[in-house]
Image (cartoon, rainbow, N blue to C red):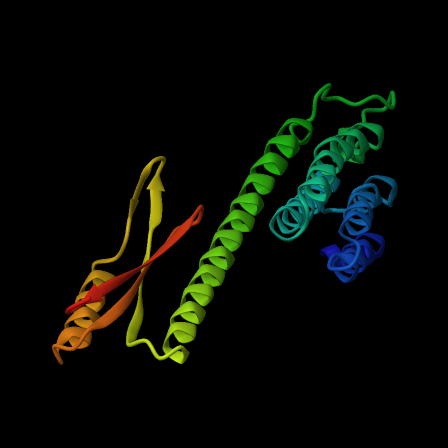
Length: 223
């Protein structure tokens, strides 16, 4: 026995994968609908609850993707849809192996109804962390490009300006940030090279972090 005996579930997962990039919420709804297929299908050697775990994992990955690549509104809607929708479907369509002859569930609160919301929250937090990291990286890249453009503009104006010497500050804990020792050594070499001739020169020095950026011109030699 294999998952191939559940074509409806396979189709739901495939359609969801195709829709995920353009219509993530619709893709998630299709994935959740696939959770019903094992419960209403014919009995199988594979427990329907195991297949619902597969659906829960797929839904968690989709929530993580939405949190990382979509707006906060879309990702929160997706998390609520997965965290509440899947347990409701499991309760409404319990797996056949949990149904005794009287037709009522033998387990009043299936484990999946507790585990799924927790897993969805964790998936959303992971995706949101990825989104924040990408946003910080893009901000640092934009600030570095702006400071490099400023140095080029000063050179085109005829000013002897070296650099920029960029120091990227990374926050490790709240209120505490550091920058790499390599950046300090590279900045020191840049200042030494700019002042080696003894003529007046300048070095553009910039600091960059995920929340701010600053730039200043270090003058060397006589004013």
